[in-house]
Image 1 (cartoon, rainbow, N blue to C red):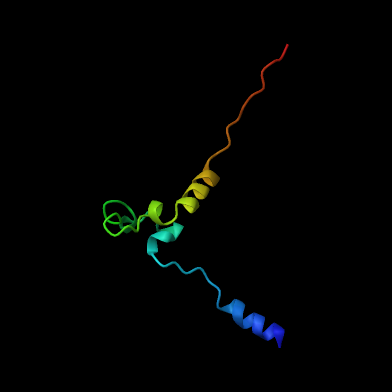
Image 2 (cartoon, rainbow, N blue to C red):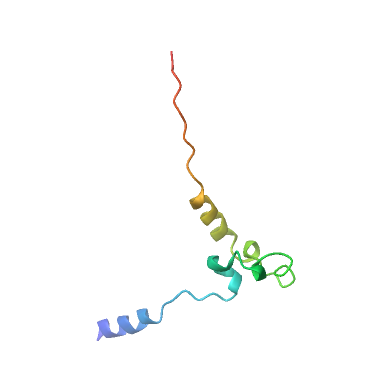
Length: 71
């Protein structure tokens, strides 16, 4: 019985966004760029500042540092 209840509850889980610009997949669309989104406050930077910073940081390439001779 517990397994059935757990299965039913987990089947209802999905990524649903209240605003289209909360979804990182939509950030490059015209409606998620200023001035379109600034009128109603649904720009990605207004809705999800943490997510945007995290994704930008994840996409940065690591900087190669060459060690110098220490004498």
